[in-house]
Image (cartoon, rainbow, N blue to C red):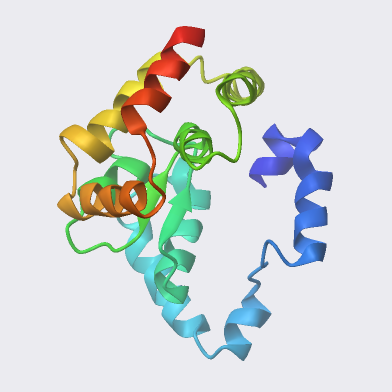
Length: 181
């Protein structure tokens, strides 16, 4: 539904990723075949109590992530009391939320895109979604969350492990990015 309302231009790319197996679609039928549909329904019922009616898409996404044991969830809803902030703050939730800016920054840190492409992609998504975010502020939030003052210590440890495993020169990467901003 989100794509139909906010991203007609990317539906073909997503359909191609589905066809190639990069994205797996979960339907009620698939959840029934995995014998987890009742668990999903129970998660939806519990999660709906936490969020407003405008967050129904996120409720389904969070419930699915909980049901299938997904490690992360990408969302565009970052308001106080919303799914993103709740997932950051709930101690008993194992799903790590990301914004599109987080994903672009991770892609940059992992050398899947350079600094210029990352900024261009951020500007493109930001303009299309009418979020009016500043990339500089999103980088600051990312650094604070994963390096300075995390909501969860596990997230900081996760990032430290990635940086070590991939030999990422974080300070240098962010300095290069800031020069272009």
